[in-house]
Amino acid sequence: MPEGDTVWRTAHHLHEALADRVLTRTDFRVPAHATVDLSGQTVDEVVSRGKHLLIRTTTHSIHSHLKMEGAWHVQRLDTDWRRPGHTARAVLENDEWQAIGYSLGILEVLDRHDEQAAVGHLGPDLLGHDWDIEEAVHRVTAVGERPVFLALLDQRNVAGFGNEYVNELLFLMGLAPTRPVGEVADVRRVLSRGQRMLDVNKSRVERSFTGSTKHGEERWVYRRERARCRRCRTPLRHGTLGDKPTSERNIFWCPHCQV
Image (cartoon, rainbow, N blue to C red; front, side, top):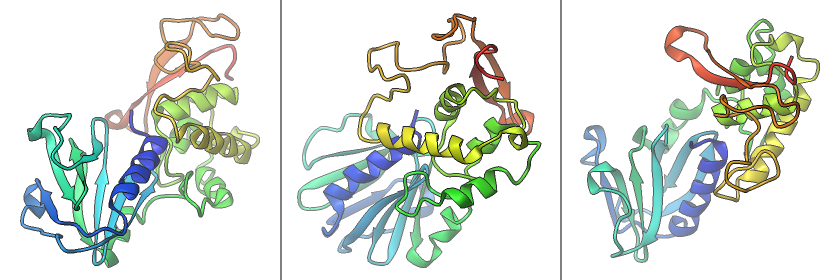
């Protein structure tokens, strides 16, 4: 599942292939931008902002979000695509590389000065060079009665956590997902631990939260609802939680280790 670490790594690979090179071809396969042609422009940089990607050219920003199924593939020109062509939403090429964006949840081409309209609502970026933990603490704790799970998952508070990270982080911190964030003794420590988790995982494809990278041993609670806690052997629990029924997310926890 794409979360902040996946998007950071994607931006890194795109930047290596595209930055400081002239685009020789662009193909945006969404109706709103089908006629846009950025060929001839130089890519300045590719950056991640939480779960959002920004490919910045001389005058524009190509903004994308992977959502659940999206991916950007970088490969040599004239090599076979690794996903069906009908799932491609963007194709960018220079004289050596091509980048194909498949099944992108969001794709838009913005003027550079309009970039904030797409990402300005986001909280501090956990993997950003300007990570501001004090501002993140302020935002996360602003509504004290809100469950800590939802406060951490809200991208307006802090950008980069997804469902898997928040479930695993709360287990490691001994916090029940439903605990009001106002009752969490040290939110700064929680955020610091979560930032370190993302930072450790950002350079590897297979995430691990337990220290093991063996298949089936990487997670404490996420998607382990039929298993027992690795620490205390209590059966794990699974439920849903959201601010409203249409936004409910899956939660996984140990009722003994998390209070």
